[in-house]
Length: 198
Image (cartoon, rainbow, N blue to C red; front, side, top):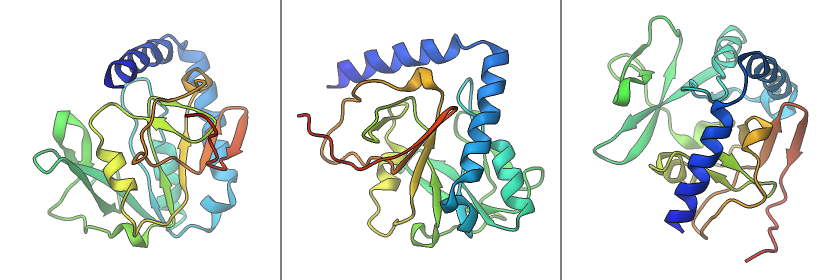
């Protein structure tokens, strides 16, 4: 399965990278509007978001909006040696972030308190490829898979992505945790998690 996952990952990343800048910007706006329209987003008090990398959907404006709405905003921090994510609250994009693993901007552990997954009301999950059953494929390290498998995390899991990232079937295993809501530029789909295929 790892070979098929790697091949699919490279194919979808190439397709995402080929999206024109104008289309990327227009669809990013659509995704931001669609996420903001979700009842789950509107009522959430504590939200786990992320900062986009490379050509993926960048939810930074959503982080800014959440801060202005006085939501508790939580971002991930990679603990590479422990092969997991920890999640920490930020109050400012300008003051609370430091350079972390692979140069990614992450919460400063010296000033940003760690948050328990059980306290989350909304989780935005990044990924490379998705299917209509909520299966997702990340970048291969498995950080989010381990976070999402935490039995204390009961918040709705949402992924926002470009149409080019939707595939017929994401290779998945029984321990993989699907997302609950798929947000695309022109569609929002609530997943039933009833994939009949082997």
